[in-house]
Amino acid sequence: MDRRRLHQLHPGRRLPGRETTAGQAVAEAGLSVPDDISVAGYDNTAFAALGPISLTSVDQAGRHMGHSAVRLLLDRITDRRRPTTRVVLSPTLVPRRTTAPPAERGSLPSP
Image 1 (cartoon, rainbow, N blue to C red):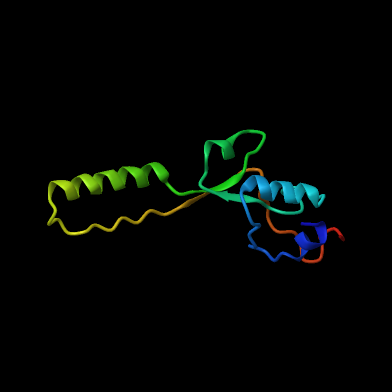
Image 2 (image 1 turned 30 degrees about the vertical axis):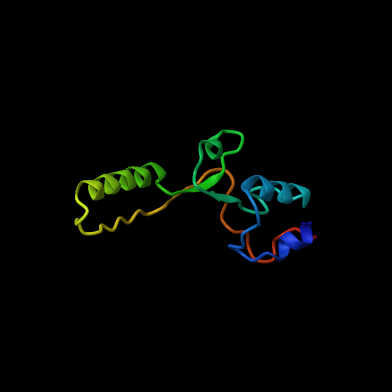
């Protein structure tokens, strides 16, 4: 992916692949994170929180999700007639150093 292609991406556009692939594409295009483009991941792994990386991420509440799944499974095993339970978990944005407010329209560097 070249610099011109990255500039054609509209806000919110996802780059294909993993965060490392996106980072490589951005670097190859000669762009700077977050000055030229913001990058965010989805699952808030320990890797994302490391100081040199500091990737903005969406936390899916994985531990809470796992705990709820086990509890619901055990409840169902204990009482198979128990009515189903709906669990709603809200993801949380964890802002770090890979995102910034959008630049003014037209202020992107030329390709």
